[in-house]
Length: 499
Ligand code: PLP
Image (cartoon, rainbow, N blue to C red):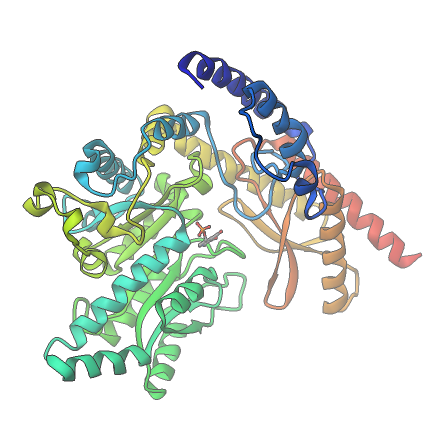
């Protein structure tokens, strides 16, 4: 494809993408193809001769679209959103054009330096304490996902713990002590923490214990709950070295009680003392709300913690992937992840004057992801991003209000919290099992019909439906439509049960 052909193809692709976005609400939101559908539509191998873009592009609508679930549709209210925006897409386009696995500063100084600048901008915008800025001992780095961020910091936490608790030893004694301590290490996360913490523990080769949450309508981890688990770990001879706390849990968007967690931990080991527990704040989705001053009190305790991560690609209009990880001490990451074989040595890295982000992450190569964040921050500005979040919060309140207007049909279990409402369908005088069955039937029928797409969950043994009003294209009319569908479906199933 030469430049002229690229221009024609790109123009045609962009026209198609714009049309897709302008009409996305009219498509069935969730794909209903059968498993293996695509293999039947595609040839057994690539063509002998190259094909024209026109022929390739035709297959997008006929072969790919049927197998897409449209996350950008305003009828998509499932999981957490994966927001996209046109400035975000432009960032991806330039990133593709400048393709390079820019692992060291000298591989493309702009890739490193823009990342440092925009992540400092974002840290200030989110009201993170100054210790997370690159101008202090900390700094931010873009990872592919919140899960990747958790594995990365857990490895740093593990090595820091082992280093600090065995620093008085050497030789074989040191090797034995490390091997012994490793077998006792335990990573902690609340029972509502995302499963990525347990997965990270599996990858890092350490044990995992979960901390019970409160069983009121908060479902948050507290210092008291944590204290019990720490006591139990001690009794079992285990050594907790890492804890995930969550700002916006996946099931209910609960916020852990950071203040009481910080004070429990300071009793366990004074901050910065050997054996302190590394605390990571997983704010994958709800961290986006910190752009609004009314949520910024939530960051007060973060100076006592060690790392923080939020996904710009969930709720801040930045195309997947852009998970922004901050650490309070970049040295902890670098100590765990830096390897310097001869082929990576260069005068700039050795000068100590530049950042080599390869030492802040698991892979070596990295994409130019800061461009899209830069474009988004500049296009929307602080006011635009705040308006975006507040609009979704307001839509969440509207949806919860609609549910409350039909208490004969629905019961809200939690929320609206950060635009997430969790509720169940109600069967008058029904047992818990019957309520669960009804809610599950409503949920499954709504999704099967495919006009809207929702997810479900089980909270304290209660089967629940989750509705998230944080899609970039969310509007009041779509939430009202979702509510009407839920009312009609619940009535239909209840009627079929009573007849
Ligand atoms: N943490 C929380 C609170 C989440 O809700 C999710 C996913 O929704 C994750 C972590 C995992 O996110 P990722 O897909 O970026 O790994």
